[in-house]
Length: 298
Ligand code: ADP
Ligand code: MG
Image (cartoon, rainbow, N blue to C red; front, side):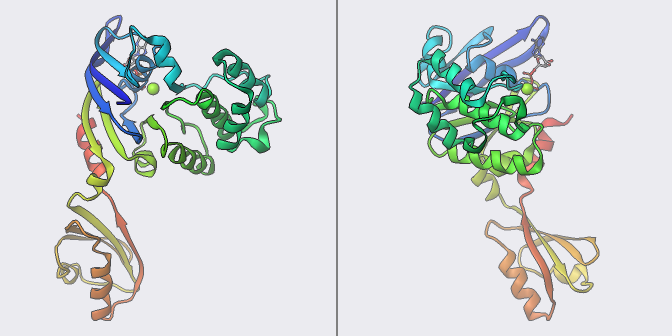
C-alpha cells in the first residue's frame, strides 16, 4: 500500500483545514487531488510528508507511520512543495549535488535525474537563469533524487505557460508509470490530462474518489459536430440514443447521447446516409466537469 489515510483532521488555530479525511492509494498510479483554493490540499500533502502534524487520525506512506516513523516516510517520498524553494544563485548541478549530499545519494544518481527530467541542456546554468518550466524540472529532479516510491507534487504546473505545461504533464505521466504520484491541482483539465484517478476535496472533506476511465465510460457523452450547412436540430435527434441536440454556434452542434460506446462513427454514418458534409467531429467528456461543479459549489 503506497498511501493510507484514515480520518485525518487538522485545525490551524480556529480554522478547520481537514475534517476526517480518508483515502487509499494501493498501486503505482497518478492520482489527482482536486479542489478549489483553500480546500485543504496543501495541508494534506504537508501532513503526508511530515512537515505538519495532524490533530487526529493516522496515515502511512509506504507502510510507514507518519508520526512514529517520520524518517522512513521522508525516505520513501519525494515532495515538490507548492512554492518550489530553490536557491537561485546556485547552479543546477550544484543544487542537486547539495541535496544529494544531505540525502546521502550517490553522484551517479544526479546525472540520472537530470536525464529523466530533461534538464541536461540547462544543467550548467544558474537556477535564476532558468524559465519557470525548467525550475519545476529542477524541483522534480530534486524530489526524485533519493528514488522514492511515492511522489507528492503540490500544484506542479501552476504558473507555467502552455508549452511548459504540456512538457511537465508529459514528464509526470512518464514518472507515474513506475511510481505512485499524488498531485494537487485546482484545474480539472489537468486531471483529465495526466491522472488515472481523481480524489475531490472541498472544504476539508473528501467528496469524490473516482477512476477516470470509469468516469469516461459513464453514460453521458457529448459529440461536437460541425457541418458545412445548417441542419435541423429535430433531424439530428433521430440519431440512435441521442437525448439532446444544441446548435452552439454557426453550423456546430452538440449532441448528447446516453451511450457508453463512442458514438462518433454513428454520427459519421448518419451524415453520410443523409448527404451531410462533416467539417469536424469531436467527443467531449463532460462527466468530470459536471461532477466537480456539483460537488464544489454551494
Ligand atoms: P489548498 O492547498 O487546497 O488551497 P490549504 O491546505 O492551503 O488549501 O488550506 C486549507 C485551509 O487552511 C484554508 O482555509 C487556509 O486558509 C487554512 N490554512 C492553511 N495554512 C494555514 C496556516 N499556516 N495557518 C492558518 N490557516 C491556514
Ligand atoms: Mg495549496
